[in-house]
Image (cartoon, rainbow, N blue to C red; front, side, top):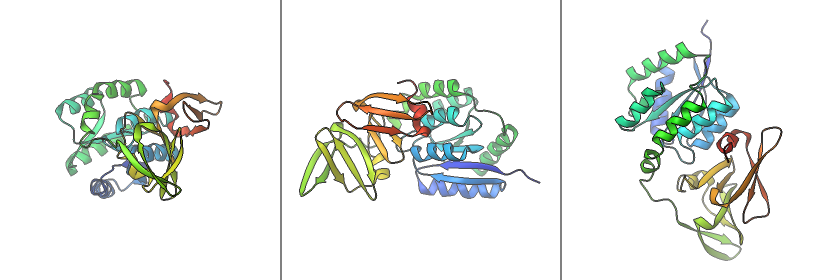
Length: 260
C-alpha cells in the first residue's frame, strides 16, 4: 500500500498554479495537496500548519519570496522538502544546483517534474539542506531577487478615508496595515484610516524590502519597528517607534525575525 505524502503548492499566478497541481495529481497520485497559496505569507502559514512532506515554492511571490519562505521552513518544518519553481536565468540555476536544491523551470515540463518526483520519493523522511545552506543561497541571489521583482515600482502613496475625509498618505509614513474584512486599516503616527483594498492585494504592491507580513492579518513597515520580543512559547511581540500599541508576530513568521 502506497504511503500518503502531503504537499503545499505556492504560486501567485493562478494559471501556473493550476497547471502544476494538475500535473502533480497525474504523475504523483499518492501526493495529497493540503494547501495551495498565492503569496509567501500564506505559504509559510500553510507549511507551519500542515508540516507537509514537500513544498513547491514560486521564487517570485508577493510579500515573502520563495527563498525567504524556504529559510523559515528550515526552522519551522525541517522535514519538508523544498522545490523551487522559477523562471530565473542560468546564473540562478547554477546556484540551485551547487546547493543540491530541487527546482522546476517555468513553463514546467512533464519529464522534468517526473524526475523531480523520483528524487523527492527517494529523499522522503530526510531533512532539508538546513537553514545555513538556504541562507547562503538567499545571500547569493539577494541582488538578483529585488531586481527581478521590480518590474513595477512599489506603491508610493495611497488614498484612504477617515470619517468624511479622504487622506493622501505616503506609504513610507505607514506604521502597519491590518486586515479589516474586505478593507484594510492603515495605521500611521497620526491615527488610522480605511483603505478599500484587501490586504492580500495590497501586499503585491508594496516594497518587499521594507514591508513584511508578520501575521495573517498584518503587514508592518520594518522602518517603523523598534524591537521584537520573544516569549517562552516562541511567539513574538513587536514594538513600534511611532505607535503605542504592540503587534503580535505569528509563531509561523517568527523565524524571519530571529536575527533582529
